[in-house]
Length: 361
Ligand code: SF4
Image (cartoon, rainbow, N blue to C red; front, side, top):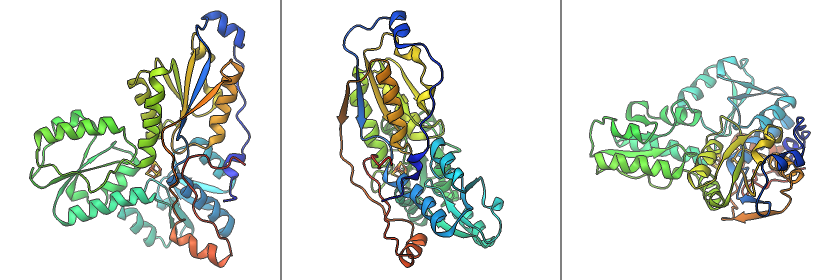
């Protein structure tokens, strides 16, 4: 895969901050300074595929390429693609008739697909195949007249898309507490599905409480929380108990990044923060800190993590140990709408994903 443009953007410029010596004088550190770097971290196969889909669309069809919603929930990625000619819109009715629109990795409901067809839009569906899997489950169980309890965050694009597959059969369960109050039509014909990027532990707590009330609640045919979400949470769970500070690189609207902060705190990190860029790291976070843990959400290019590592090194955390809890080798091929065009153009690209260590250019 040669398309590394997203990572080619200039590193962020650190703001003025206190010197390492001033920070050390404020609260001295006892013990050796070290940094534990989570692996896997960063880009998953679905994000990589979606970003490449927009890059390839720009390359082969030319700008502008419209994208419904953020292609993935990361500011850096979105801003970099905007510079190259992508136009991000909230809804398809903002796209000029006949233009090309890419559906984001989070998926869309059938109503959105219909609306695009009615406007004569050309579409590329970059929905992650693991989200599509959940959509198919929703369709299948609704067809069999099950009631679906969709565990997920109200208002998240992925939940809107999955809900839209079977709105008459689905209720969203937003939290473990909601499991205590939700009412169902038939407790014997009930299945739970979930958003792909939730906290594994919290989701299982929601299921446990649901099952207390509805013992015949069925499990999904396979895990809906995806491999990338689970793996990134497992890695930070290993690091958190040793960490005085955890820094998660990821955007505020990235569900899996926000969950990583919560999981780090839950598993013993003394403090944990999320940043989009290294220049958002406050040097006061380093005061008295011996061990830092660093990870990144599934939509985060590695270059942003490397910026954080460089900053941490300036403050004495140059000793980096990678904590590897899983190897990822999942690859998804590019959306079918693109594959034919790429074949005609002699472009042999496939979607590359996996360990989140996409070449940084
Ligand atoms: S986080 Fe999981 S579901 Fe979302 S794009 Fe990545 S692999 Fe797909």
